[in-house]
Amino acid sequence: MSGTLTTTWQSSRVWLLTLLFMLTGCSTMNIEDYADSEPSLKIEEYFAGETVAWGMFQDRFGNVQKRFKVLMNGEVKDGVLTLNEDFIYSDGTESNRIWSVKIIGDGHYQGTAGDIVGRAIGRSAGNAFNFKYQMRLPISGREWVVTFDDWMFLQEDGVLLNVATMSKWGIKLGTLTVAFEKPGSQKAKKNNH
Image: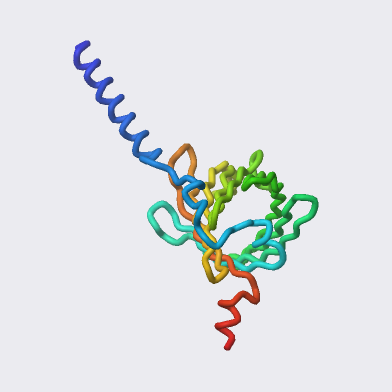
């Protein structure tokens, strides 16, 4: 019986290690890989003034759970980007978040907001920006703390694309996809003619 118990324990251990490897993935994105990518993204410049965004949240199976529009207004003062975000969801609900993002320098940032646990850590290089943070999120009447790994990429036409992975305990819960545009951008002007 002792041999069977040992074999079962070893099988469970191998299965657990395999599961952990699969959950953590083989590799992660590195901000430095985008250092030579153009156009250059500085969030304090991009988000200054008005910005409009459209997005959706998909669960881990790819099903769209929420769609939304965001009206943003940003101001940089004393080395801090204050970004006021007004969310309008497809179901008619609304919410607001105000980010306070400290510009550390050399592509480093730290951010806080009312629903953020601790500090968000940001890095930029080339056309990319990565923001990692934990957020308190109301789900089914309870408050969950979830982790976001947020990646933004500036395109040549001024559109900023954002893909964020939301997870808890290392398990992916879903993906947030957002497209940002500056009012009066070249693309917006082109579409009005």
